[in-house]
Every structure is written in structure tokens, then in C-alpha cells.
Length: 323
Image (cartoon, rainbow, N blue to C red; front, top):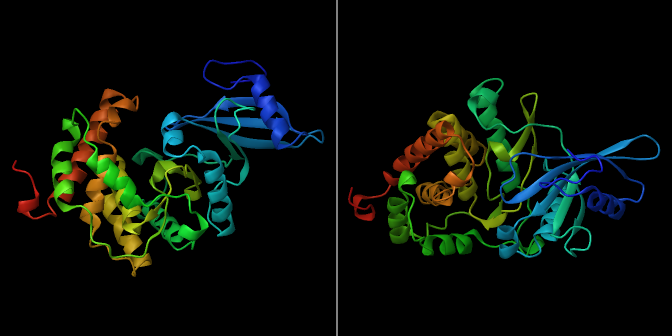
């Protein structure tokens, strides 16, 4: 917690005051607090006051090395994307400020309005029936894919096939045995790219319940757009399916897939096995770095293996490695 006092893990008070003056000279720092869950960026909630007694609640996102290596202008690009998404009526945080000069803070950053809500990352967090939960996820993803925000409006966004080709073509020295990385890579290397059956649209890039905010059982905001790309909508579906299987079970993933398909009948899901395996590859070698307890790590790894095994079974034996 910051109240004008510096902290090892958070921006110091003077830096935050400089930040607030840049946003609005009338804002004064009340307090700041690190928010949990940031992996690719450091995230801080800032409460600021005005002379009339009103307050602003803001979220500061400081980009990490991985994001900046992929896109040195991550802050301004995410700001521009959020403006477009807000204009399209999507439930996203309102952007307030972005800076890449390193004169206010030492790294590029984005400031958005704080949205009151909580992430849902395990079954105990779900209120109401499971299908209501997955149905909201499906409906919101369908709305994103129908938003009309496409390549000409966001020329900086990469095509997911380019991103995927790099990831699939870059073999680490050590493969993740717990997540069956060798088997996943073997099939992807023989079967990539997937059939191109759908019009390319805006993709969130990391769509799952933990990148949404929920309040009283309702999905109120989709956050963390730094992985947004352009591509086949099935890629987002596959990522959500994987995360749902890992954290909530395969039945939740099946519900979500069915509900999305009902809402988006024009989307051809025939390439889903390819995108399922690509989604599975995204976690290889990374899950052990998330700071999970041994019990949670084992649970998520087991769910991931279940998802991967089901996806591998969709390919002909000739495409699969020998057991």
C-alpha cells in the first residue's frame, strides 16, 4: 500500500504524483495498491482525489520486457484499441492516459479507469448455474468477434498465424513433459497451418474467465488486451476451452463451445483441433513459473493434459507421434 511512501514492489509516491499531474493537474494521490494477477505487466490501483471531494479510481499498467520486445509501443497501441472497443460498445476499461517517454515512469505505461469486479478462476468463485457462467463468456466473445474492429483500424496488430508460426517453429532446449509438449509440437509441425475457413477478426488473444471482471454473477468487463491479434475467431474459442477445462472441467468447456457455436453459426469450427493444440502449446514451459501451490499446479497440469489428449485424438494416427 502506498500513501506517499515508496515500496520495493510498487511505483513510489513522487512518481505517482507526477503521473496524476500528467493525467489531470487537479488530481492528488490518496493511496495506491498493487493488484494481484499481473504476469506480463505490473498492475497498480491508484485512488486520487479532487478539490471538490470527488475521487477517481484508476489502474496503472506498467509493461514488462516481453511485451515491449514484441511491441515497443504497447502502451499507446493498447490505448488506441481500448478507444475503438469502447466505441463499439464492448465492456472494456475506459482508457485515460498512455506514455512511452520514460519521463514520468521509467517504463511505458497505460492508465485506465478502475472497474469494480473480481476475476473468476476456480469453480468456487462461480455464482449461479455453470451454463449461465459459460453463456456470458460465450456471448461476450461473440460480441468481440462481431465488433467490426479489424485490420485497417488497428494496423499495428499482428496476424495470429505469424505469431503461431514463430512459436511452433521455435523449439526450447527442454520440452515440458508434464504438458506433453513433445506430442503437441510433433502434431503441429506436421499439420500446421490449420484450414483457413473463417473471416479474420479481432481476437483478444488470451480470452478466459481470469481476464474478465465479474460482479454479482455478471461479466462486467474484459481486461488485459495486450495480446490482441487479428485472426481466425476459432483461436480465441480454443484458448477459452483450454482454460475452462483446466480450471472448471471439460463439461464447462463443452458448454462454452456449444453456446458460442449457437451464437455464431457462421463461424466454422472444423479447425478447432488445430487451434486447441496451439492453445495448449502456449502454456508449455510457463505454468511452473506462475507461483502456484503444488496442489494447484498439479490440478491445472492434469486439466491441461486432459484437454491436450482430447485434441490429439482428433488427428489421424499418421499425424500423431508413436506412444
